[in-house]
Length: 620
Ligand SMILES: [Zn+2]
Ligand SMILES: [Zn+2]
Image 1 (cartoon, rainbow, N blue to C red):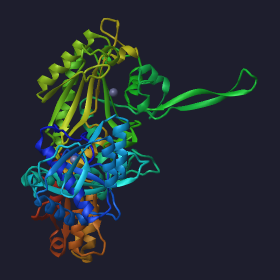
Image 2 (tube, rainbow, N blue to C red):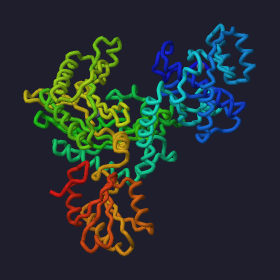
Image 3 (cartoon, rainbow, N blue to C red):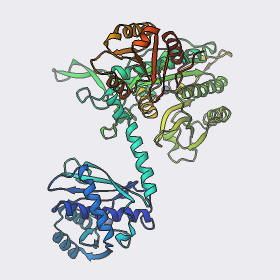
């Protein structure tokens, strides 16, 4: 195969056996594809983190339905005990050899290696009838490959050299591991992750869509997804109210001067939507008219500057502090289109934001309270696999003057406060030297997701610099003006990121308090429709998201539909239930049903919802 692209491969190519195995298997795959699709042309075929792929131009398409035949052919090749033999040819001989192979893409790449990189020659590997231009290394022979150690995974389109101006090739992905046990464990984990994928579940459960007509990275929240957003906001509002926050509402736009003042412009320009410029006509020097920019507005990429203007809206004294301003604030960031991904990477986002303005003496207690909020909210979701990355400045960083505000004493004090609070709060801490924000030390909350990914979910800062820059002041007890510390915090992150994360965490089966539909009533037959509707009305009267499936389907079908929608509570009602005033409850994911008086169900349900319990609570 071609020079391997090792960018995805964590292994050392020289001595890693797994790398050789994957690399060699990709040749075996290419040989099998050319046997099944004679005339298939080769692109690249590197090892990757969990296996390998190979790109082809095919005379006739291949789909996943062809995998059994391909795998069979590959196993046959492995059994043939084909030795891998290396051959090195000088430039001319190499090009002649490639022409004999009839591989136009290999030829293009070979020319590039020779002409642009100035290589004197190229190496080739042969195994059985298959010849590839390749740097190696490989196993000695196909007998060193395990027939049960690989599995074809998927087919995808991929542009030659990753450039959309080039021809589109067919990429076949495969997993490969040293043993069957490792392979099977990996495939299982991959399938679990697929089943939990937030884009897939977002579609199946009608949570959100991304509509090209509205714009890339700008999700539209459907009614079901909006329920989840609203529940998260309600949770945040309650917790913040109890912790003494005050809510504010600020616009999504601002005059761009504000961002020049904060220093976001011009440095942050690339991450922002272009400015909106309002122009007016003026007389020009040559006697005509010209258009000049009268005002310029920016879609805000963050909420902080608006909150700072709320702080500045009044004279502030030390008696006003701490001032805790909270808002689910909407921001817009112009993320690179290639980076956009479902709800995880978006251009429009709404953040559980707050800024706490306080004195240096108060900073510690305020940060402690923020850490308590983290523990409280994550506890509600049963999230405990997280750690706090403490990001500090690096005084030895040669670029320090541009990277950090130049105030060594300020850094020392702020970092001491953060470190002490983190240690006292008992969270797990990891070190992030040199990762601080411009204005102060940072705490990133990092989760390990159920599928094993590391995600930064939320970020806090103890900011000692921006108040000076923006001249935000309060009058101290000494009658002098002082700059407040500012804590930036967002425990529930953005709706977009957090909901993506929760979809995956719950596999779409949300607990009752968060579920878009909390109860669905299913009747055994139409005879009980009236009773069913009475139950729905009673529940809705208590603000429960209850509904009835009165489609003409059989009961079994209705139950299956409700299960597909991952509705947490299904109430089955028939003759006996109607006569006794009872309901039969089927909980999502549980086999056992329980019949109980409707009043009991109602009471337990309300407790389950108001306490945001993960399970359906018992009667109390
Ligand atoms: Zn190779
Ligand atoms: Zn902020």
